[in-house]
Length: 295
Image 1: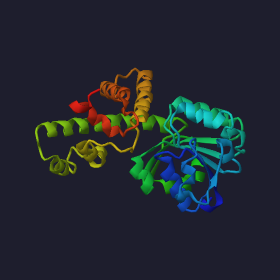
Image 2: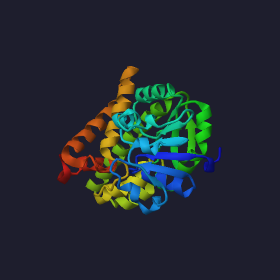
Image 3: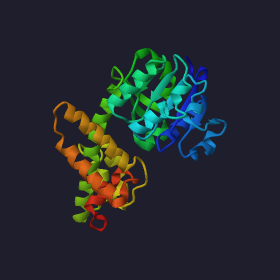
Image 4: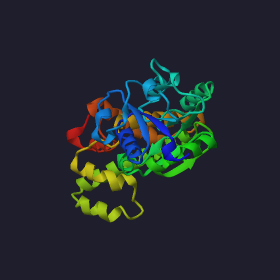
C-alpha cells in the first residue's frame, strides 16, 4: 500500500503525538484525530483533518489506528473502555501503538484485538520532541511482519530508523533498555554540569569541548544548556520517564537482575516529582544538585 491508500486514526496529541500527527497530515495521509483535552485537535497545522469526539469515533473506517498516549491504563481505556476504539475497528485493520507501556500490557492488548481479527504492533519511539518534529524518531517494533510492512509508509514519515525485534512486546522491552540508558545519561550530565558549575568553569565552552569526545551523548548535546540555564521546558515529562523506569525495573526483577544506577535515578526522580517538578523535562534532574531547588 502507498500512503494515499491508507485512512488513519490518531489518538493522543501530546508532546510527541502532536508533531507526529502533523507530519503525517503534511505527508498527505487522511487523518481522524482525537485527544483527551480536545485542544490540540484545533491546531492550524491539523486543519482539514477530522476532529473526533472519542477513540471510537477516531477509529471509524480507518485502516490504521495510531496511539501515542501516556501509560498502560490509558492505552487499555482507549482501546477497550467506554467509547473505545475496539468497538469500531474492522477486521484486518492495524493498531500501531507508539506509547511506552509494559510488554505484558502490549501482549494482552494484542490478544484481545486478535479475537476480532485486528492486528497490533507495539512501536514505541525514541528521539525526543526534536525527533518527533523533524520526523527523525527511532521506532522499536514488536509484532508480525505483514502488518509491519503495511504500515511502513507511516513509519517512514515519523521516523528515520525502523527496527523490528520480533513478537509483540519485544519493542517495549527494547524501549525499557533505552530508558535505562536515558536515565544514566541524563543523571550523568546533571552531575557533570553541577560539578563544573561548582568549580566555576566556563561550562558552555566545557560542554562544547566534551560533546564530540568520549563523553558525548544525546543528553549532553540537547539538554545541557537547559541545565546551565536552570530552565526545563518540556521535551519529555519527568513523571513519564519515572513511569518508564518502573517498567524497566519490573522487567529486570523478572529476570533476577539488579539495576542499582537505574534504581537510584528513579528515586531522584521521585524526590523531584514529590517536590512538584513532575511536569518538567527530564533535564530537571539537575535541580537535585542545586541547593535553591532542593526538595
